[in-house]
Image 1 (cartoon, helix red, strand yellow):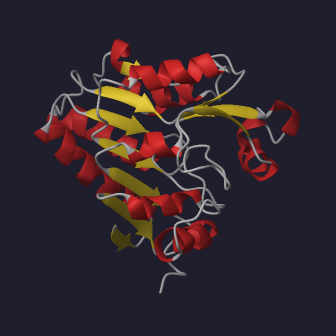
Image 2 (cartoon, helix red, strand yellow):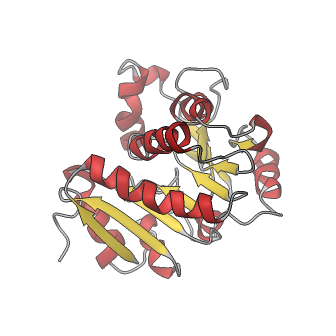
Image 3 (spheres, one colour):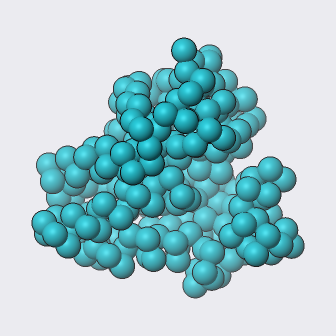
Length: 239
């Protein structure tokens, strides 16, 4: 695990972009595993700026997203499909047919997403970390062997996401479809970004604790190529 600590969110985003740029320029048909949430937005803004300023192309790139809410239409303003188009895809030249975001609510939908990834190898998987150590929507207690599956969102995760739904818990989805931990671990490289003091306990458990289903992100200790980029606040509890 290669841990990089920088001052603030902007520096985290810049460092993450350096990793991403190297992958996309060395392999124009790279397969990118992408995440939603506030953590990677700065990375995506840097990708858009670089595409516009320097012409870095994503025309041959494929993307596979980590997760999506169950029961939200794709065009819903809070769907992860919409998030990705607003925050990245509209600003680069990726082809719509090369964009994959999981969708659905059944075992068959999960199996279909795994099948779509069967013949590709994800070159880099972007991850954030939840305050409870979740990656994707793999909450504490999720088996490390789990593949794409439907999850019931914890009350804590729903409360954390309520701010996107007018702070109305009745509007926050109760379920999500997510890549499983085993699916995430198939990626050749993992790029984890984390900022803020509220992530410090989870970051400490991920890096310094024993791998345990109590902190799903701790599984990354078992991966051969992980870059973790933290701001000082998220790194504040590390030894």
